[in-house]
Image (cartoon, rainbow, N blue to C red; front, side, top):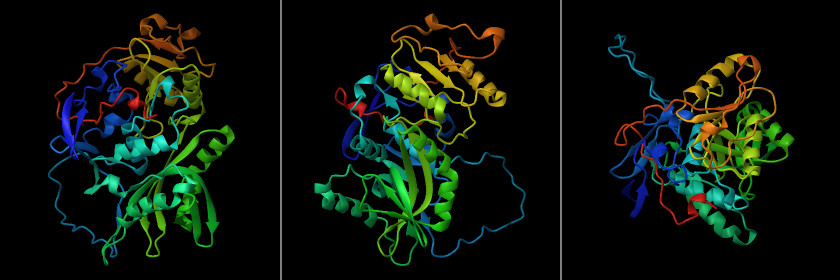
Length: 408
């Protein structure tokens, strides 16, 4: 750990690359990056300046709309003299994943039951946005997360929202700046020129989308929204870039979405949802792994158990009958530094390892014939990075009063 001065405050932070070296019950424990999509963007799309404590996010989408078209780059015809990989940049959905991760909203402990609601989510996301820089701007200054709505506080809430909107008004004839909104999607109303998007806890502030964006939204996210309706529970969290029209109303430009459980834990698909629900019903502690920039078919762990003697990575096959997708997932489970619990077949989910028990005592016999199924297996421990490796990003992990790290 070390102490950093950020915005006039002193914050205890975790040294780079040492998340897995902390005790499993330490608030600063972080599962290895290779279990999620974090390793792909670490120190590339996300970099931190230890001198001023800021974290810079490289975005793969615009945060402004120019009045004039861009001039095409000059074509010199010269042959390239270097071979280098294209720099990785965050998609708008991976920005949402990163802030959810930074806010520790992917962690779950039994004592959080009944204590997470939108007011907690709002505060955690606002804290996570502090000292984050996007395209030279302070992310917290241009991020709108609706407050927990109270009718008696309607005017004060609107005034605070308008302060964010004021930061997005173009100066003169310059480029139109974009901001971010992160909110729970409630629905949309079709209008003659597009649609009005309605977010929960913002009943007095609709966001406009033109007809093209509205139709793309239905095409891209229609299945997810129908799935959520069929389940009858959970939340659809939307992130979008937006600008303020001359008339003063917000206009959406690019949209991403993430489904979360009733306890605000992100999930992908029915089988992963079943695993997360089983964990919470059994009062287990765990950390959800996020995909970030990785494609949907890239193998990652679904979660890591935090209440066993040693961490155990949980791997879930979305489509057990897809051999092509199962092979890389199996390889990832075998190569992780932790023991792994796997649900790879289409049979019922097997019991999780007991709380506080050693992973080695919970091996399960593979299915007959040697086929890959559900098991808990020890995995080789990879060589850990040196704690002083400056190539790694340094992640904020404030030391808070007991219970405060729960965000609830």
